[in-house]
Every structure is written in structure tokens, then in C-alpha cells.
Image 1: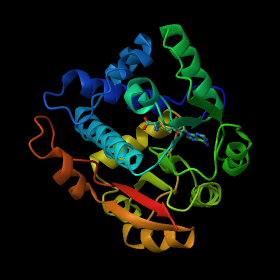
Image 2: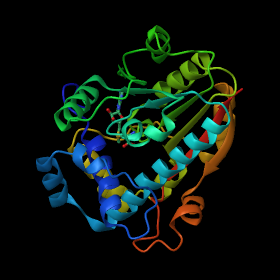
Image 3: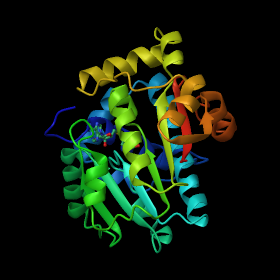
Length: 284
Ligand SMILES: C[S@@+](CC[C@H](N)C(=O)[O-])C[C@H]1O[C@@H](n2cnc3c(N)ncnc32)[C@H](O)[C@@H]1O
């Protein structure tokens, strides 16, 4: 990733949520704010590069993971969660869109400094009010320690029940960086705190490596300087891997689970990406 500029993939995923919000007849996730966050010239560039066979399942992946996560946000607020930490937030609009849930919730957006700065400038330009209980914390996961940065944040309470989300980020980190971050989360959050993330299924990626989906997205991510790394998991080993890091696995959704839960009866393409799983886990 270019150290000094906004993450291109964060703009693509925002564009995908905006596309779905504008075009899907039966919406899985309605991110009506995402469109404005993506500058017009970027939207035009993206539109020129779309390959529908990859873009539509990709969009399904982005909106189902957002829906899965925000369903968990609502459910865990009912169970006493008072802090929501969005790791690698990109153009996530939760704090601006769900004011109804923000009254008793502190939200922390953590992202690479350049992407966070871009978002801050964009939000300011659009004239959006920054919610009082939203805090931006710039962190580069490859260089800084999440535990130190979050502990130093005066608003973060390590004793409070906290939900973390980590969407579309693990793919860009090494396995070691992923484990370091998960260990930091287990250290800085109270028992019973939770995390939801998506991850690359290393088995499926191997099996499907010649498919158009895998090839085209790989080529594109390399072209824009955000190549995938090896930060995924083998689904059958995820429970044990997380247990070693201090978590109990609650749910591990495969592409067919995701299709069954969210994409049946969907009017557009009904398939999810073949190699992305969603995981939901609790700190022991
Ligand atoms: C594909 S985007 C996903 C954004 C958002 N979570 C979503 O679902 O739309 C990847 C995000 O990971 C962040 N990211 C990638 N590498 C990072 C790093 N080393 N440190 C901090 N953030 C990183 C990028 O800045 C970007 O916001």
C-alpha cells in the first residue's frame, strides 16, 4: 500500500456499497452515505475498470460482510457492548449513518494514517458533523502496536464490553501481523468482548487459483499496489488458531453459508466470493 495516499481498495469497497444501495431491488445492506464519500473522478475511474463477473460477487461479499457485522453490532449492544472499534475502517459510514445506536456507544475508527486523513478531509468537505463519541486513531498495523495506541487513547475503557470489526484488512497483512493484532485485542479488551472479521480461506484460494474471480482480483490488487498477502486461515483450523490467541470461535461462515443466509432470492447475482469466510469470536 502506498504509505502516503488513500487506500484504493477502501474506495472500491465504498463504491460497491454505494452501487448496491443505489441499484439492488432487495437490499442486503443500505449504505446510502457511501456514494458521497467516493469522489466523482474516482467513481468514474472505477466504472471504467469494472469486470461484471468479478464485480457482482465481490459486491455481494462487501455488502454481506457489512450486514453480518452490523447485525452483530445491534445484537451485542443489547448484550451490554458500549464500545465499537472498527479496525481498518476505510470509508465505513456506521458512525454517521447509525446515530440511533450511538447514544450509549463509543466508536473508534482505526486506520492507516493516509486513508484516515483522506476520509477526515472528505467528511469535512461534505459538511458532515463528526459525532461526539466517534474517535479517529491513525495506526499502521505493520509498524505500530494496537495495544499501546488504544490504551493511550483517553476515551478507550479496557474494562468495557467491546466489539471489534476487522473487515477486508487481514488479506493485506502477513499471518504474523494478523496474530500480533489479535493478541493485542485479547490483551486490551475485557473477557466476553468480541470480534468479527472476514478472512481468505487458504484452502479455497489454492483450489480456485485458476478461476476468473481469483485471477482478476489478484491482478487488479497487484496493479493498484495493494497485493494480497498470506494473512488468511484454513477454516478447519481457525477454532484452534484463535483459541491459541485467547479467543473462542462462535461462528465461521463459508461462502455457501453466506449465500444461504443472505443471497437466496436476491435479484442480481446470487453467489458470494468462493474464497472468503466470515468469523465471529469472543475473548475467553
Ligand atoms: C479493503 S479496505 C476495507 C475498508 C473497510 N473496512 C471496508 O470494509 O470497506 C482495507 C482497509 O485496510 C486498511 N489497511 C490496510 N493495511 C493497513 C495497515 N498496515 N495498517 C492500517 N490499516 C491498513 C486500509 O487503509 C483500508 O482502509
